Image (tube, rainbow, N blue to C red; front, side, top):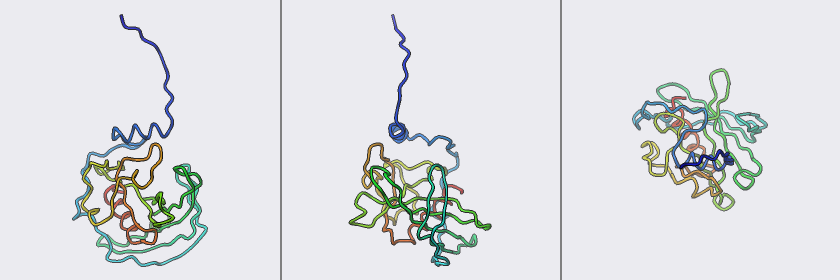
Length: 203
């Protein structure tokens, strides 16, 4: 005879993130697309990025995050599809993943000046010694889904330093997904990653 006992489980946000990561589930509100990710031949990056503006005190709100960027550097690059205008903003967030951390947010700037956050580079655990930052890599299946450590990344990432995210940002519930690591002074890699993400995810 089976006995049914009603019960309620309470799981922290970090616990939910760990389960989602373990079973490769999309984030809430994220609908995986059926289209395949772009091939390397379809990802086009500019030959060079030109710094066109340097500002500070730029405010941006996305989700529950309210950022003030200082500096806020805007770049332009040209591809066969036209001009890309992308900016990198630096900020700090208190007690993020166990400590205060530097963030670099890369935003796409539209024709009318509107901003859309594309990628975020977070200070690694050894940032004070290395000045390195890491960004999660999305675009699996042409969506905003992340790549598990066993997944093959789009070939555009072959020449970049990719690692398992938790290896560089280790905290309870940290991602077992693939991330891109670069120096905080490597604006070109940050910009190219953001543009690749835009194309891979059809943003």
